[in-house]
Length: 115
Length: 114
Image 1 (cartoon, rainbow over the protein chains, first blue to last red):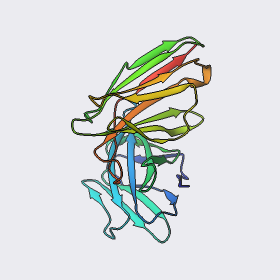
Image 2: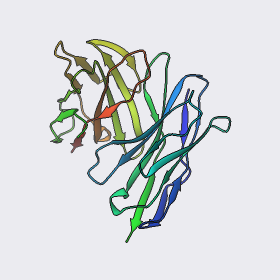
Image 3: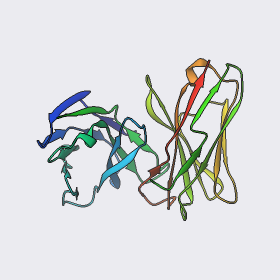
């Protein structure tokens, strides 16, 4: 069974600064994807970034990038030049192939960007 | 906007009642997933359908059932509702079934059981 752990329940950052959210996961599957989803106060679940486990290169999407350490089963999200609109809950999730293609989520990190 | 639609946005009902939540996937997506988000359990997978067939079951109660119709929209039926069923219910969709693929989420239906 997969597990995803986010050890930081809450974090805060000043506008324009950089923040890193941590995530560790555990799976016995060799083929899997990792995701970060954002849930702003509107409660919509928005895809931020995804990483294929077979790719060594870390994914980037504009101000968002990941540090994927496969051996350590670590998948952290770095947000650069933080903006007020980045205030949200951030969920790390793992999706494996084989059987159910269900997402397994961590408990989330509440990020507040302060002006 | 993810392209996944869910109705209704909010639903308030009483214990013992039955409700139906509806989801329309993104155009071209064949897989539909249902998730429940509650304060104590977090985000949990309930069930997956692919092209009309049930593909996988998660932590779905026997009082809950779902189906996917020929036009690929899906409905989640919740019956004999209890206070603990109050939660945000998300539908997500993706293109594939067996291949690992990104799931895009709808805006959710907030269910309140009084």
